[in-house]
Amino acid sequence: MVAKPAAPAAPAAKTLACTSCGASLTVRAPGHTVSVACSACGAVLDAQDPDFTVIAKYEQKTKIKPDIPLGSRGKLRNEMYEVIGFLVRRIKVEGVYYSWREFLLFNPYLGMRWLTEYAGHWVFAKAVSGRPQKNPDTTVTYLGATFRHFQTAMAEVAYVLGEFPWRAKVGETAEVSDYVDPPRVLSSEKTAEETTWSIGDHIEGAYLWEAFNLKGEPPVARGVGIAQPSPYEPQARPMRRMFWGFLGAAVLIQVVFSILAQGKLVFEQTFAFDRTRANAAVVTEPFELGGRRSNVQIDIRTDLSNNWAYFNLALINEQTGRALNFGRNVEYYFGRDSDGSWSEGAKWDRVYLPSIESGRYYLLIEPETGAAQFTYAVEVRRDVTRSSYLWYVLGLLVIPMLIFWYRKRSFEYKRWAESDHPMWSVSDMASDDDDDD
Image (tube, rainbow, N blue to C red; front, side):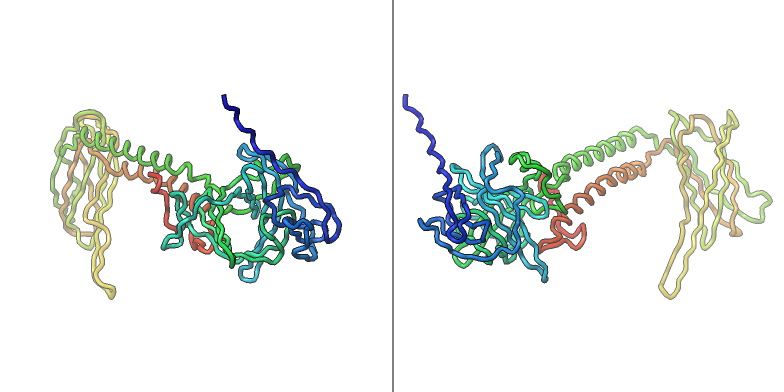
């Protein structure tokens, strides 16, 4: 049986004195570290020179204490890392500086990782394997995923502390471009010498504080982070399925009721109104409303022209004498003015009487009108399907979907507010909601 070779030993940390001020320095990643910045005097030393010569020296006017101290060890994604470097970078937009913080992590077997923090939002990143492909538009493709351009700016190092795999110093600049596909962010750093890419994903501050066993609370998150996952995205597909499911059920119920409904014409008659008659009231011939208890549809159609009529009606049960009283108004006007032809109202009206029990009925009709004469026709139908109920259901289903969509859009609006492509309104950016279907 062949013995499994032992893992290579982790490089031991080195302790040395700063050649500029004499302060004690610790190099935690010998063999990987190219430069180390002294926290006492700000000098940047060449970690690959046996004499640790000073590469650059500047006076750090403000001492910045990293939220995660150098030397802190924590287990992230089941791997142990040690914080070995810290720097502050900033960009200038319309005369205003925006800064963020970067922590360099080291694992002797996995290499370097980065933690970046801006406005309380954290990203855990590493160098990419391979090279992302830039597309003709503003997107980049990497490992089959498309990342949308977020921002490009010239970033300047404003503060350095600890060790780095390059000669880090205050004042050095690089063109930084970020592309997002939440919860991931793809970033490039371009200098005169090279372009490097890294990929990271959103990580919660509370998780970091627990992983590194830090006291207190992480910085309070403000706004929406560049790679912060939307709390609404996981709900988008279930919401759409629920909407279409309920709508499909409503349509099916409507179809079933349409098939089962009688829709039977039980009475139809035309009447002439004449103001000169002593009594304009009309009592119709009896008609039968058969079948189960159901609705009754009554249509009134007239030949009114630039006039009105009000109908007092009563549906009376011939056997019991019980009456259901109601009124309907019909008016129709038209003409022409400086804006052209116009019309108002309609020559007809419809009413639904719900839940009328079966039996023999007649109508009492008493018209009131401004016209001297007109004719009107009355139709009575039994057990009619109403499509309006389907529209009511659709309206009730649309309301929560609109609220959900607005909240989801508002979240993205806040994300892109500081990007090179801000959304001018909540509905400005094309939706990707259908991509999951």
